[in-house]
Length: 91
Image 1 (tube, rainbow, N blue to C red):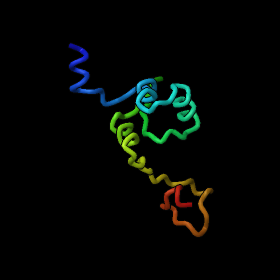
Image 2 (cartoon, rainbow, N blue to C red):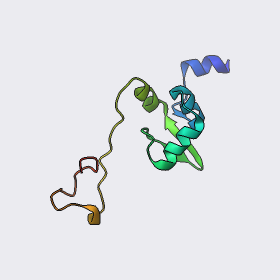
Image 3 (cartoon, rainbow, N blue to C red):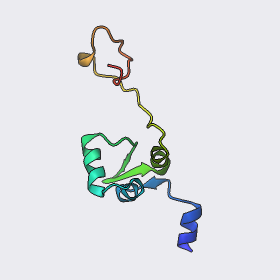
Image 4 (cartoon, rainbow, N blue to C red):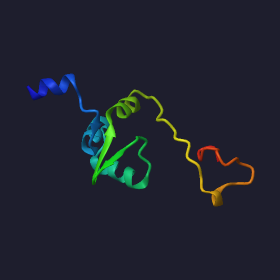
């Protein structure tokens, strides 16, 4: 019964372990990417646990580029020729 329910209504948030299985990577590789800030997926911390949206993992597997968030750099990091609202990946 539980297996049948899981097939029809998959969990919207995945653990690092579940994400690693879907991506064909090791759990350690994903934890290193999280620590380095290079994991190309959004993640949520719930207490000490990390959860990753299933939809983001499925888009990555399908080859859709992860969404870039436009973060604003602190004032001391801004170049004189860049406006304050320029996303950091443009600089």
